Length: 407
Image (cartoon, rainbow, N blue to C red):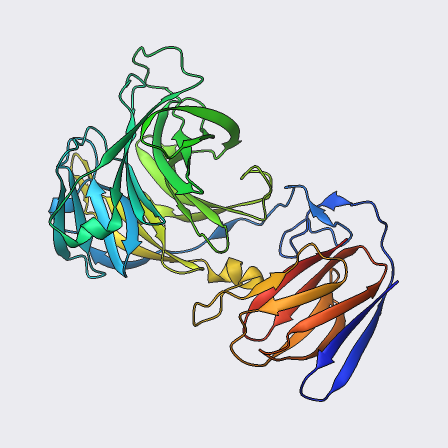
């Protein structure tokens, strides 16, 4: 068994807690307490978690001007939203506010817009994805890279990252191609691209270096999303991924969804995968762009739908996922990320970036309270003694809940 000992700064007491020893061999299963098939004995997440059907209503913020009728990608930089139009649009980035008004236009001087479908940022760069490939015939797929500081000017100049798919051998027009794409992000100098598979309703995850020149996109995984992926958002602190898309549920009638990916390992699809319905085309239009506003809210844009007498204008929405993120929130309201490390651990837990003293609770996988007390910003350490292997949860009053793996 293992003793958990901590400094109680407020009362100057040491809290000791006796744990029953778990098996040293890791047991795989669903580790999410909010899943329908949560396994309290599981120590490692095997991606098997199942969730009840969930619907979250988008909050409409504004109608977008007709100038953005074909809006597609979306990103936030310096508290400003930026978007662009897709196939055949001008090579322009548009800054907009939450009232839907266009604030500025920045021309991308040395680029063409064959089919811009996504835009993202990483470090000091912005990336525009000219990656649309509706019929699978394009051999000039590319991502444009620009410096974010250039957005202060009215014109930006870009470098080009061209690419081909490693597993595409035919470029004959095909309405059911699986080599279309509208979603990507960049992290650690790597492009992560998610395909829009018209043929089988999967999305393929491709990777290639985010380096200027020609690259080969290597497929590393795939997942049945039961629809068409139109954008993706990645949160750099929580590592959560949100895939946006829609599915035809009746002839020419679509319903939108997001897939939330979390607690994954090397493969993004190896962890928790939760699908959330966000409305049909009459309610939300055709959803095309998504980006994180904070760790639990996202901004979503929809392009115009014009089909006969049916006309649905382009719009801007907010998506609040706090109801499903509350159990794993790890960023306090002041946006300073609290770190709990090392994790996994064997002898102690350190809580970093506390701005002031906070109370805590230590809870086992069954929900049983193991210990509680107070940690200070100056000395926020819990010492672990003796032998124990298993999972527990550290809940901080001002910083969320952290899963701790003790090896």
